[in-house]
Image (cartoon, rainbow, N blue to C red; front, side, top):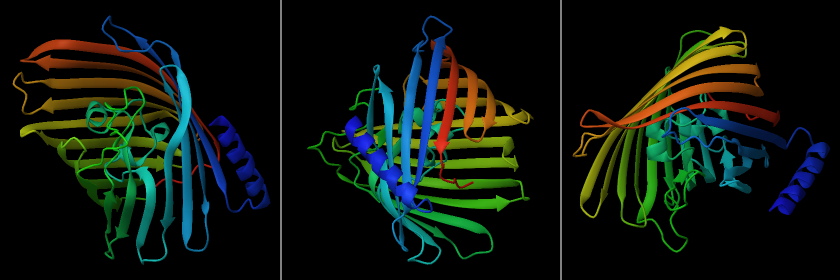
Length: 353
């Protein structure tokens, strides 16, 4: 794999040198150290090269753009590159529309539409990790975005994927992560939609709200329905986010062998800049099993400090405390401190709001 990757880098670098207005290359690195604070902590207590991601993106011709993303993740002490995303995209064939075909992170919610190194915090909230795994939900198929012809800004996202993949993570076994065996196929394609509204308050402040639905049925016959709301209020002055308020609320209904489970979860994140390059943030997590006989509820609270050297490098320290309660009794606790270092090389693709 490394020989193939080296050849790809050499070829693309040569191509880029010949036409620096076309192919763009971005590299993102994410390093993490976790230190357990209580005896029952799940902290790894080692410096982990969590991910190294290479992204190649460029116009293919006057109609289409192409994106290839490969990433190496730490899994039980070894790092192996794998395909993250590969898709072809068009923004001109259909008025006010964008569509892409290939393998990609599904365009639902807030976190799921961004790679982990671009998140405002280090680890996934409890609800996202349980519903979509530690990083994101992804699959292969087609996704269509339409900007409605209205004075207010409304966007509709529709997606249809084959359904054989879903949860993208690396700290657990493949079966636990939601990957079905190669010979097993989903009962029907995964399908989803997101309807969002963007409101601009000023040249620096904006708000986006999204409503999400997703339905899937895996090879084992488990059928799942997701419904969620995502919200972001952000004030950005120059290259600094001076205020961030971000939240997602998700409901999941699962049914297998005539047994139905319902879960409701959410997180709320707030961050203020305290100096030109620094910010303080706090996140609250919540997840409740609505059908559990023991009244199971999971909680989490995270406090963090982020130093942004530039838009290409950041250092983040955080302390998180998670605990579960059954019948109003605390049954498990996990407290850990984390140090994260993220840096980006090359030309990083522009993000939406």
